[in-house]
Length: 155
Image (cartoon, rainbow, N blue to C red; front, side):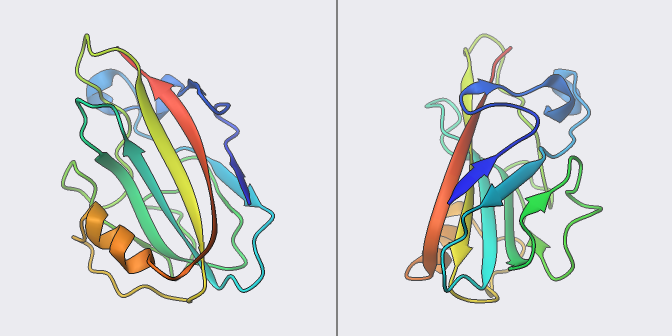
């Protein structure tokens, strides 16, 4: 499985329009495309997590129940143009949907790891307030494949 973004290359800088308003951006969710989906896949889930030590796995985006026929999310899809049947969860910012990068000033470049998970089930029964650990636990034994892309951002 492979995931890519029209906005940035793996390990490349995330453009400013995808960062939080407080960091000078427009908080548009990043565009994503994935391919080479494993057999037996019935749906997708995604996560975007800042793994910088200061961020302590800050969740920027969690989405579940993305239908099998969907293989991309357009720029700015979060909260307005997500595929029918999909569900966005609460980020570490306390709001449902995408929350772009907004690293503390002076902490260097932060790595934002976006992972798309191919799942063997059509739906995950998670509440909107599920934590990252609850999200990961719900995926256990259901992942047929996954792929990640990392975007960098610092200020």
